Image (cartoon, rainbow over all chains, first blue to last red; front, side):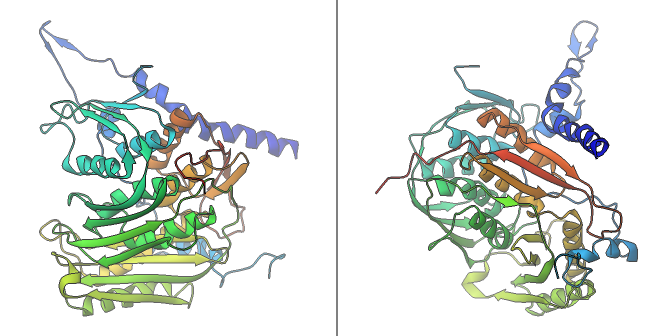
Length: 92
Length: 372
């Protein structure tokens, strides 16, 4: 049981870091403006952070297309979410 | 920095920043709004949102520089009352309504907002979806009672608009903490298939094909057809479908799809739209949780603003919008959530990984509300 707890502890900060930590990481790769002949600076629309900063402001979460809902196994993977599916022992 | 409150770059997550700024009373400065764009500065729909915020608050100070690339916002008091607003047609009413939903419970007087514009478009959550998911969610946090309603008076599709929506919401002094950890099983699926300025048969065709997909799971499906005519049908033709799955615990998961605005993109057969929308609902069920993906941020906000007690909510995978929202909550309210991943066990057929969000509310109380 203690092993399971430790494993869980390890998994938890990952997501936390993803949410709260990556802002700092994204800032690091910012200053890569090259100079051409000392006069012009290449303004690349480089990192994805910039485009993200001016992206479309919508709460819609576009689904990834990796799931093919025509397949029987995909349909089976959510079958227990419905009342018609299998019930747990304790609630019937 | 200190004199200007919080500072941000870029126009994305514009609503989150303004809404959280208004609730927390912290000033916010947003720089570099589309500064590298050919057409720099704020767009009309963002200006329209600012105008709406100005209408529901008292004493807000808003400064925008000449090109519109820098915005400074000092929030005033949330006043509420009766508000009418013509929303810009670039975004649908859902865009404005999402912001209002977050602010409405914390007004001085109960809000009655009449919003005109595009009610259904493919970019934002439509009015029907917010009505069927966001409102029941807010009820769980103790925001309910008489006069908590969202009514579609007229429907208006993009790009012409011409729709009208009335949103009324009572005020609350405090928000109740919640424990939504068990989504339970889905007992029924409801939906609305709407069509305006096209043949009323379109809605029936959508219903037929959507049922075809969903019937393999559950027999209790009812999809209303809503065909609006004449003055209630707005200015542009279009059709669409909103599906809502209700669980035994009263959680709602929804998916929706609208036809592309006239003159943009490929036309879509109603049969395809129905089938794809049904698959989107299955995707949403696969993600699961007690709150669907488009309302995650609303739920997290209400958890944050709850009384000083533990709130728990089980969500599906966090959307990018929600992740950014969590960062903003940290900035404005100094609150970090405890985030735990729950993996489904081997023999369970309940979709993908879930995320359990836990926090202690900041004990926010509505200082605007008059005490009688």
